[in-house]
Length: 535
Ligand SMILES: C[S@@+](CC[C@H](N)C(=O)[O-])C[C@H]1O[C@@H](n2cnc3c(N)ncnc32)[C@H](O)[C@@H]1O
Image 1 (tube, rainbow, N blue to C red):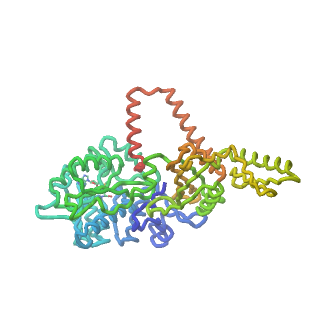
Image 2 (tube, protein in one colour):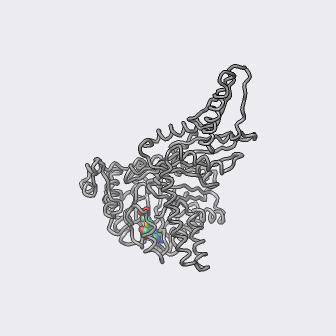
């Protein structure tokens, strides 16, 4: 799922770079850009050299920074780096220690590009220290600082690999913040993991040495927290990026265990990847209350519903009559109003993925057995008409289009109105409505090919006497009315095929007890990391 919309509001890559413009302006980018028949410019994200050129060109174009990214070194993806930098700016503004140009910060593990110090110095004029353990990275980082004439603002320091903060800060020095993109992976299983955990659409970049460390990010950040307790207020705000959601939960617990309660966290969303940012402080909350600091992505109504119960989904391609999202909204509104379901449009927060959302309240089940009800009503209507020719005329007004069994018997001759109670209509005797649910509409973007974009409708059960099953029947009805059953069936057969394959395999090689425990563990981890990207 494209997470671009959830990027920091000031992130200039929220809209995506203009490849056409870059190809026109930069010959080195032109070499790796491909123009398709429609004139659209694409690049191959799976090619490491292309990613290197893209980052270099964007740094030049958008920040006037000239950098060298040595081969085999991590190519920093700018949308993510910018999300973190903008969050640091938010924290600094929230704490209002001083103006941004007077802010002093440290970047732990600055890497060969020295990306964070370069951005912070260039964008705000911050004074930055970048620490690093790897000699070749230090050499390259120093060169990048020099080539951009930022030596007056940035210092690259070699540190001991066993220490993170200790020894970095002089006795009488203080800093406003610390940031860090720690090595994520454990040393033993890097080769495999580094490859597997890269974003599936992007080429893997960076060496094992840069990306892995004994104990992985969990041990690295634990050390950072423990060392921070020793120097406490010398640094006003400590922060680190995290690559796994379950590590975020782990560190929140650890901070609480150490009685560090002044902390905050955010999500960094970009492209197809998610990361997390954690910040903590030893300052009293009167001086700086991080718990009230701005975050890029707040827990929205969707998050809450997702946590409570997974939604029921309808997914179909954005094509033909659904090529525009507005057409989907119009069609949905038409169906809903014909079902006599009360609709209240929701004002969505800016940082949600949804294009449109509404809360719906159904008093009665007006959709089940709709065809049967319509035929019955038609038959009744015909019979009545035949029986009543020349005498009392009973007309049945049938809302055929809506397939709603609302039969109003109007006695035209007599003033007496006959109401025929319709057996099939489940008129609710309850005070409570039958069903209250939220509907959210979003686009699943295909970054490479917009023609492969899909519409996703999520239905979240809220309340109602009919329970969750009634929402499932309504979903089926919507699938039929939207005429997208074919995609739904395709989707189901794919998942069933996978399930059957898994089942066959399980039957063939029954797992040992050990395997089962391993699988359980794996499942727990993946559910905790549910939205963690695989990179
Ligand atoms: C994931 S890379 C991040 C590089 C860069 N900051 C970025 O975001 O692109 C982690 C870096 O931390 C460095 N590193 C590992 N242990 C360190 C330590 N104890 N102190 C400082 N840097 C360390 C590695 O050499 C590597 O360059």
